[in-house]
Image (cartoon, rainbow, N blue to C red):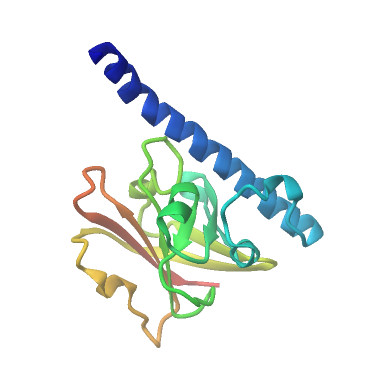
Length: 181
């Protein structure tokens, strides 16, 4: 009985990783198909994502950490498992404080796993269709989960805020940048 329990404990993370990998691949195919044809492919209809959310997905590209990832327009547990997500609803790329959440995945390079490697001055690109908004990292700090003031809009500054958990999961890493182009 203990052997079976041990096998189950070891197998569960692997099975969850495989499920997440499949959903991430399906999301990527759906987004590529939307970009090329304007429609979602039938063979990715098994994704349990709202179709409007797929059409409203933007892309985050951070050259310094080789991150090229979709950002879904709503933060839900399901969405966070397969992609980065917008923290505030109805955000407009390039305006005010565009906020993005992502897991600090156990898989190297996935989601915000390498966010801690960013340095002041690094470039962040937010891509919305043909428009590219370029930001430069201003700050990187570990904060308490209750410090939500980093998400507030500054009417005089267009910025981006990226949030993930620290490795321990007890605090958050907040990276902020200002729009330069």
